[in-house]
Image (cartoon, rainbow, N blue to C red):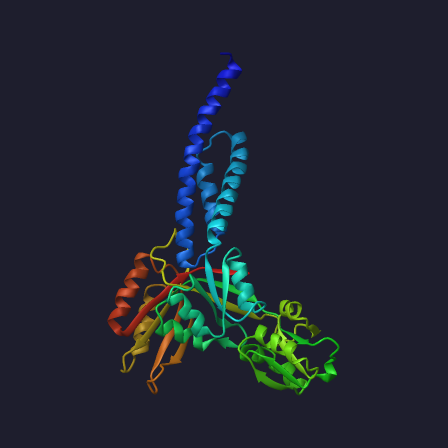
Length: 363
């Protein structure tokens, strides 16, 4: 056997070993996607990919080979993501609305290979995930202009699901009408209360009558079915294409810095942070009916070095003048400080629920 044949034989042996390692690696990739589906996490995790590349590159000492090893690793990652996409095709995402709604667009952005399930309201989408009809529920929790979505916060308080991801979606509201209608024809606008609030100035300036609807896409569908030139919907450009409407005026929301945050709910909770991957967490709690009770809780949070990015107070259903608090904090709740924080808060809160830890992504 000459030198060329020996090299080829050695490559064949290495290829066989690599094939076995490839199978083992893809089996672990299957476990990764099972975890992601259960916890409502997207396939792409750019930060984790960069950590893996940096770690694995340290195994290669020859500078020239490092260049090719990066290409090799990125190729392996692409194959892994393609395999995860195939496995994720059985995933079901519940949302409130119909195709074209901002929630639907967010669901397809986060989980492009999953099946989306439409529901008429937040409660039924949430319940579908609780009962196993969906793997996750994607629901809006706050808008930068119109404020928090109280009903979704109430579901977080009373329900059993956890938040494992937040997605920020830029929202542009548009005035949509049936073909042939003009701005002068419009007398009434139909949309979700949040969308109406976001466009309150425009509605007031044009002296339009408001009509609330379950969500923006359903409002657009309603306008298309009515075929009334005096009625317009406030919704996305996508809904105009879906339901055969025309955009009479684009970007009618009061501010162009209009972002809605969608929370990904699932039955499983992230139990451990991956090298600080989850940099936010949510606590829901009630306080004892005594002077300084809330101050004690805030002091404990501050003493542990966690910044509270938001604090909302919500009335408790069926209990007059009683409230619960929905707090978002920055930091890693799985760290020793985070775990000690939970222990100390449990001694001063009537009820304490760690609703989830998450990272925010922009779509």
